Image 1: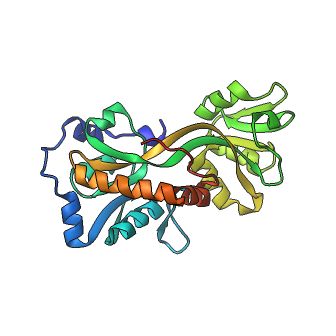
Image 2: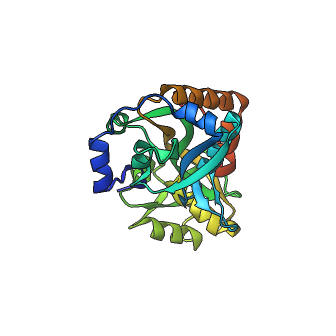
Length: 261
């Protein structure tokens, strides 16, 4: 089960039994305290991870700082996992969750979502010197992929017949094959690729083209419409200014593109 859908039994219980509705006070409280608490990942590069300076960094961390700056308040980062990020929001341990949250009907029953702020995607990656811009450019090239993964299914739909798709049993084996030069390209998720490139800068690997795109949204406690409206205003401004594209380019190697509301 992937990280975005993983919820522990304890988390599921909290999802099922929503807390009593509170008065809309989150934005007022934030502005009064001049402090916003934002939950972020620290184990999911390039969205959130701990750098060599032992400080959190990544796209989600930068977005948290961006929102705090636009609000003119101090930022308190709270590390969360897949299992506890929604409960942290429900129990008011965080004002916002910026942690690669996908939006689905089950989650929408218990929390609210902002407009999308960044992409989450499966893509093909290869060395910068490799001329690959679309599926057709994989003709005659070897591509590593994890058997049965989303990227395996998407790549199989569009790869030319002459592409040599080599399937491995898990992400570690797929990455190892690319790092060791067994394959010329790799089809994988943005997080796996980000971690791989951070650990192996000598590869000179880069994003080539997307296989499947699904956006990330910011989680907001249910009923906090004032805070959601303000966050959406900030996201819209960042989109218009090109700041969302710049963040995505910096951390994911591609612009954010046309994100949904």
